Length: 105
Image 1 (cartoon, rainbow, N blue to C red):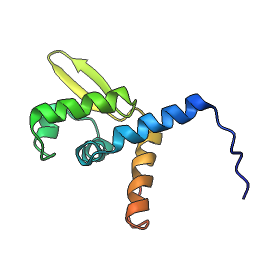
Image 2 (image 1 turned 90 degrees about the horizontal axis):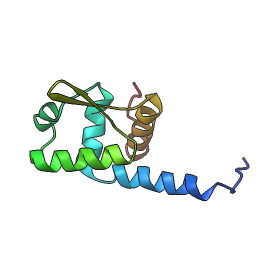
Image 3 (image 1 turned 120 degrees about the horizontal axis):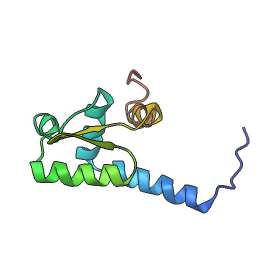
């Protein structure tokens, strides 16, 4: 297999931003929850064992990295994954660490 080692520096920068965005246990946990569908911060507070302020902080980082979309409806804010490729990225990371035992959705 031959891979072209030439990649645009801005693509490498984007990849680093995405990987840094995922590089915390609570952020990865949030992404896993959102893999199952849209959620509010209150929903996430009930699932992810972190202080609500920390959840908000992690959501901001995930949004900045482009891993999460934010949508406001009235007074509520909803978070979701932007597309299926983000879900596949999460599945790939977890498959890597579990030896491929994680079933993709």
